[in-house]
Picture 1: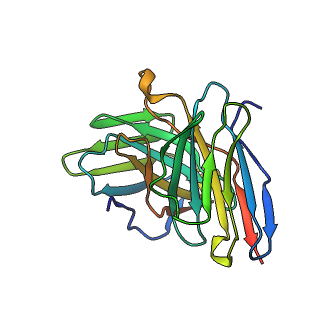
Picture 2: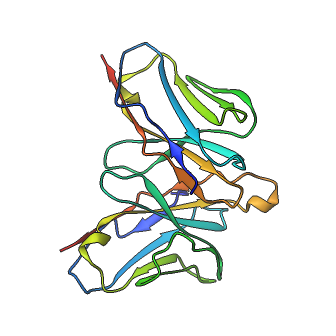
Length: 110
Length: 117
């Protein structure tokens, strides 16, 4: 069974600091990797996607992918209170199904 | 609003009734996906459809659940004879056709919160 693991517990970061989230996946055939942000009671919002090894930056967000080690990470620079949410890692195997991790809650402390 | 639309946003049903959830994809998108999020659990894939065709229903429960995406109109997720365990948030997502050279970035609708009494 394909698994996506987000093992870290809730993450508290001071405003302005860097939040770092990690995700590992079990299926070596995975091709596409996504980070979604989900506010409580709301739907997932796509914030980053990455397909190739290395780093991808978009504003304050950086996604990092290492296919050999089967992990993908998300860095949030200059964290803001509005970044407080649950972040979901999602992986696609090329059949367009997304497998999601259970999410990491981030709390940015003003 | 060019985003993914779902209705109703909240649906209350008694055990044994039927629930119909509707989803209209984002403009320009031809592929629809349904996911379920149970309380305290992650999002789980249910079914993947394009117009008049179910592409992958490997995540659908074998009984009581069905989905369609007709030539005209929204995609519908139908749950017959609902039970309390069906209470969850049901999200629809859409994407462009991955075969046209784009990857399958999926964008989610606001969801339907189903409560079974």
